[in-house]
Length: 155
Image (tube, rainbow, N blue to C red; front, top):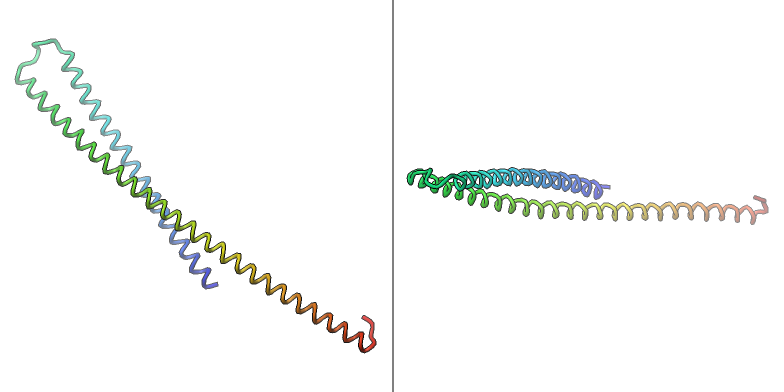
């Protein structure tokens, strides 16, 4: 029984670890969704701004205003580049968390297999004990009935 207690404790801890890995993975996936939304907003804003500038009649903007527009678009492209880096970082976290979750699942499955094997082993040992007791009882009953027959008694 102490062996089963330790295995059950290991299973409980492995289950907690697996659950924590799953929560972490879910959080990283939410972060990825948020980062993708931010990227879509940045790209949409850049496209919208370019569209407004490209749709304007020629000569409407001064050289100074055009220079500011290009500076702004450069900064916006820098923000998009940074967001791409953030997306790659979050994707790396998701990949690692997925691996960790799989490892935790495999460990838990292995511990459950060990527990099942031990339980089956215990059941077999108990079955052998029961069979031994039954055999012993049967042989004692047979010996008693044989002793009665030798003494001339009828069963």
